Amino acid sequence: MAFQGSLKELPLPDIIQLVSVSGKTGKFTLTRDNDRGYIFLKNGQMVHATVGDLTGEEAIYSLAIWNQGDFQFNPGEEADRQTITKSNTNLLMEAARRLDEWRVLSKKIPSVELVPELLTRENRHEQITLNPQEWMIITRVDGRRSIIDIGHTLNMSSFDVAKILYGMVTSELVALKKKRERDEENSDLIDLAARIRAIAEEFIGDSARKTIEKHFLQALDGIMGGAGETAVDAMIVEFEKTASLLRGLAVTEQLRSRISEVRDQASGVGPQASEWSA
Image 1 (tube, rainbow, N blue to C red):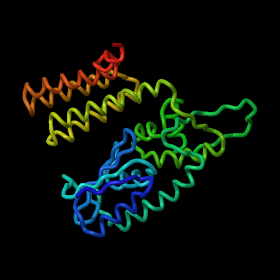
Image 2 (cartoon, helix red, strand yellow):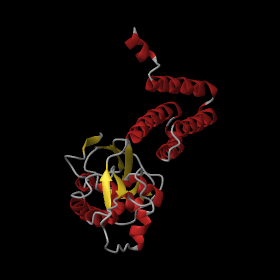
Image 3 (cartoon, rainbow, N blue to C red):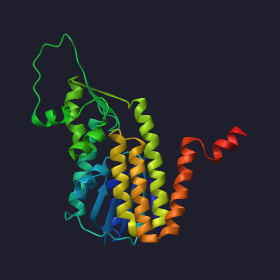
């Protein structure tokens, strides 16, 4: 029987502890807006986790600081690999420590969805010294990338990026702002890509879950990198190839037709649009 709820009501370390004491095997699925993470347990022990480009322990720590979203535990689902060797106790202690640290960071950095930008002040005369980690972050600050995006480019967790940014925000070298309107367009494309991924999972099946997820993540990277609908088109082509290989021509045509319907609805030219105009 599935166990589900809200991360706002119950932090991840507490959730894991509740399930692990019973020695269960299964998979946690955690969702937050367009983000999705997975944690696999075997006989109550965490053995594999993934979120974005992170796997193993770092994925656990990244998921542990989510303060909103939903979780669901499906018993019986096993991981196909092991990326975690530490005990639950050690992992949860570190996760709890990071959660406490995040509560401090969040006073200056309330969300990793915010976009850092450099502050310039004409009357600033003091010398500024940055350590190597700060320089690494500064080179990625362009006024467009969010903290999450910067983490992706550096293969770092958003938590670690936020820790480095914290001092620069406090000293007023960096300011944080909400994403611009162009990012709202990206958000629409990400939503479209997620809907198309769900269609691919429906028509192609669980046997291609890894392949579907890989091309979906590549599409997200392309969208955030400015490729726009081209990134979505490339993802669809790969889904059609996979469907043709695994399910045959008839299923591929059904997949193509369903995706076309969803794209028409998203662009406002589908049946819903005609109903409104009638």
